[in-house]
Image 1 (cartoon, rainbow, N blue to C red):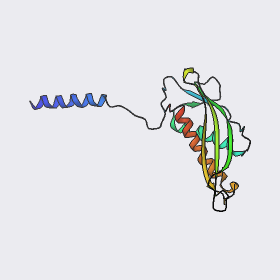
Image 2: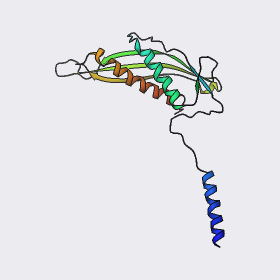
Image 3: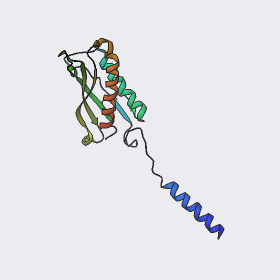
Length: 170
């Protein structure tokens, strides 16, 4: 009887081990048997206001996110399995909160990026979409003093949104 209990226990443990689902918490939902490569084109700034370091800052955030959260190999070829291209279409400042003196006490910096996500294996999954993120800052601060930090934060959030909408398929 004791021997039968041990055999039954081992059998149950073996079956439950084989049925444990595996989850990845990196946000990617990529079939790596199908998709091996991704390529990026430049994201030129087409906005009325231009902050020159923004293009490189955004492209680096996107590239870093893909390299850190996927096993895709980044190549420089339009015939890759997946491709991202687009442009920075908006870099806008707008007053937000009005103080007692009728002047804006908060200013909003909004960055808009248009992304064309191309799935060369399954064109039905391709997307052409715009994403925007903003940050508010005190109007008593000069934009030049907070611009780098704001753009870094916004670019990180944009990369998250774009990753989730394309490679994360959320």
